[in-house]
Length: 367
Image 1 (tube, rainbow, N blue to C red):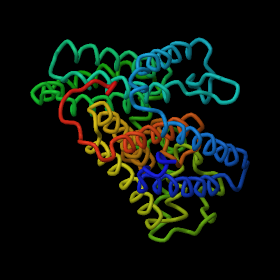
Image 2 (cartoon, rainbow, N blue to C red):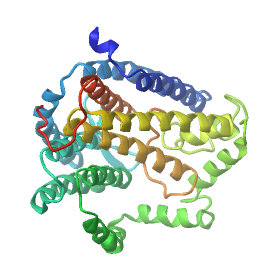
Image 3 (cartoon, rainbow, N blue to C red):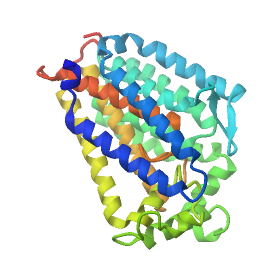
Image 4 (cartoon, rainbow, N blue to C red):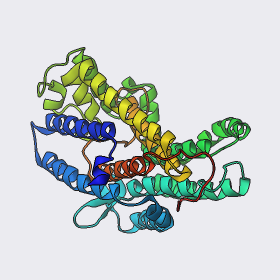
């Protein structure tokens, strides 16, 4: 009971409000069709809530002991996907575990954050040898995720890893050199892309060039967002979603449903909730009692921010279309469960750090 009383109340309130917001928006997206996904999402929230509470009681010292086994398990799952993974919409990304289809990249996303936080909890990122080991641990799963193909998640993974590396002491002069090399990396990435991925980038630059093909998603989404105006058309009154003009309106493009029915007011409320959530995680990172705990929070805050930024940028036409969900709003069991486990871990950091001195120097993840 003492652990429950020491929970961060602001973080907990944000999660409750996002749960209500997410379930209401998902219902609006599917109410005119099959409600099965809405009921399933409710079950995922219940299971995820239990996982969240369990993580609140798991000592960070134990987490520190498990980072390598969890990372290797996630890596094994990624290796197995090309051989026994399920195919959905042309992509092989899921492992059928019976109860749930596990998206292995979701497991790796959090496993990598834990590994990097543990690795740099005792090291500075200015050591070339230590940094090289970390980069291998990042690039190996990123390459496996790109093969699936899932370019969006791979980019989020690498950017979140870079956030941890920067906080861990990555020299700015190296960062400038990395930026200088980015055009060459971009060229190589373009050459390795699948044809449909290149098409997404080209349709992002000019969606009207193929309005019934690759540009259809962005055009319909822009119509839905623009038609919502300030106050929206009203809950369950969105024509784009009700008439199924929006593609993947319960997953990747669910923000367009929210914007059409709730307008600027509803989207502003969602932005506020995300802003409070991410800023609170960063505040917990500053107050964390160990470097390991602080770096965990930095990495997870980065992932949440990147998912929100990329999804909304994609739906509004400011970024190419990639398969990135909107946290706590989009339908998806693996993504929701992994995010709630991550939030439970952040809450554990807040609980253990209460009344202690914040981290100042490299320390062991075992306390």
